[in-house]
Length: 332
Image 1 (spheres, rainbow, N blue to C red):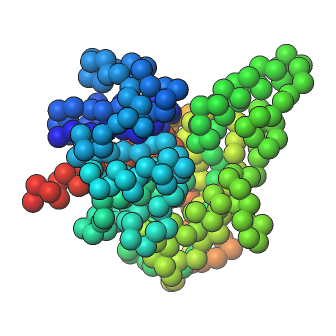
Image 2 (cartoon, helix red, strand yellow; image 1 turned 90 degrees about the vertical axis):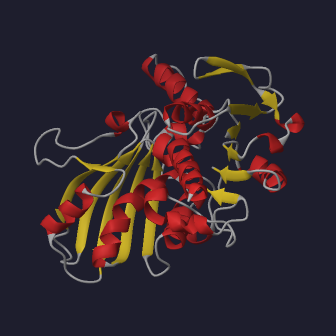
């Protein structure tokens, strides 16, 4: 089987190459594609150098599956053309709420891959990690409402934003004046309660995405409200989640459900360090769940802490898992 990655030289593109290299997918040829500026670069896949091709000159019929890791504008302009010749798995937000495009987290709704028109959307990074614990809990107890606050690493905003965190940190420690280029305020030693642009009612698009993607993936009846915050962390997103069920629940049973949730690992000890932080989740395929406890203000509600690498499960890993599901379905 042949694969292609559009946007191969970016953060998510490079992570996708790493994940594909570790996957069990048998790849005959991997085509790496990027903008004219990046064309000609050499990237390594399975000890072989691959020259990056220019998007405008690339033939989409070369690969059976093509992963887009290049943003909404590229997806808008190129994915429909590509889908006539290859199956597209798109990382951008462009197709996520299209009713004809499945929005998939394999552990949660792989059945939605049964009907697609050669375009499949990868959900938002903060939504993906949230779906993993919510799905089995919803199956057992029926979730009524979710309140989530996110603490999102800067790598979710691209390489330039990571570079800015590092440069601002140095400038701050050196007592120099801070200039913000990629963020609305200083990110070093700070928190910014603003991710993506503002929409109606004072919410941001990131918050809107979490609400509406949850409904599309899991259940239209679930009410969700989010506050999304950018934090001075390089990689991984953390989420403080309050889950209200329709009825009362058993805490020990909840813990067992989460311990068996696909793609998850529970690290939940009531002692110093008995939980997972973003730094520890970086580079790991698993989504970690900690601080599992009853909400004392509501007998039907639960609090949990969820941490995951946003470049892996939040992006590259999830797209490769979608590809694995497609290949498995085609073999049946």
